[in-house]
Length: 277
Image (cartoon, rainbow, N blue to C red; front, side):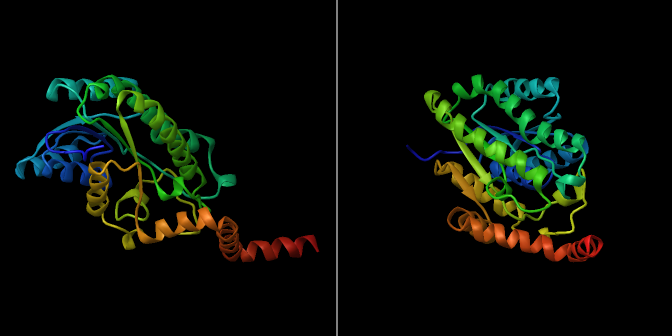
């Protein structure tokens, strides 16, 4: 299969106002793509559009929520009206929560799946007719290392990303019939505001996102993988090590995950044993 030339490609990016989504738009525009940037914040989208246009890029912002059927339709109609079709769909919009499953709220899990999975799937369904007539069409699903190996206090977020990974594998085979590729991107820790936008933040196990990869690096590696027709990419050295360890030494990863939880909750475990005795 020939390398994908991104120059001139018509691209729709969800969750485009911040973090990885914003970087994906900026890098794509620098590579000559025509970008439709979708997100819920008009102010942040307008700021993104100014930056891209000042640099000579082509971008059309659209205020939209991926969970809203009318907004999903608006995204597709904007791509058609502005650029006449679609070549690449980037499903990047996402939201998360931290804390232990037993303490979480049912509504939180449903909201995470609405954004990270159901809304994404239905937007893709709407985009497939346009992608079928696109040039070297591609669906990019921004997942997570947590979609390949879940860790304590990330059960809700990880479950939505595992669903995304499985769905991506299935549709990759199905959409090969019409020439649409599917790339799954699994970022590790990334320097974004993701942790500040959590629906719930109750985890005692914290991860330092400031030590992670920059959003620009994630975007550059994502588009490089798209150009090379890769099916999946896992980012950050630690993220890749975790995925590989889980593939070849899953019992070891389970052991250390349990050990970490027991260390953090040592006082509660000791109190429970004292009560029983």
